[in-house]
Image 1 (cartoon, rainbow, N blue to C red):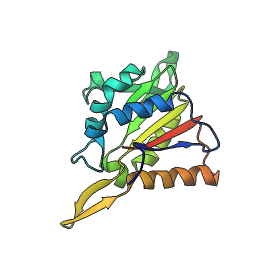
Image 2: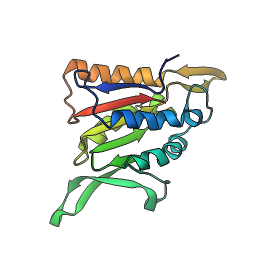
Image 3: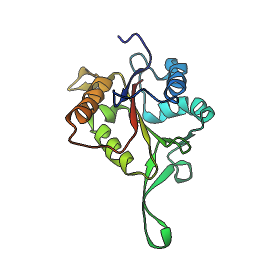
Image 4: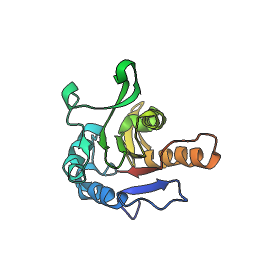
Length: 181
């Protein structure tokens, strides 16, 4: 069991985490009793975002309020004729002033390659400098009637370690904050 909550790692590891990281992580820690995947059952990304929303708003983030079109957050990727937005992606939260996109993954993050999707899609959004990526510390589910536990944070960290260590895939971010809730 980790000694700190949330578990986190900042990439690239040769860089000191920027000033926004500590208050961000404090906001996550403040709602631990609601979102700690080791002890709280039935978490979804929407539940986690709902718990984080008030604290993140105080930090200047805009957070998706619901899945209704009016409450979603879109950010441009490509522009077309007359400078009109042509392609845009939806994100869970954004801090435009600091250039931070937040993506929070629940069970799908453990089993559905959501980490790869978030890396690619977020890297294409205009004016993004940082990605904050939240995954469950532990994802529990049933397979064939047997309980299974997946260490989502560890698995996501392995992916990011490989990306940064190999040097084969150059991401455009100044940094990525991976945190396990």
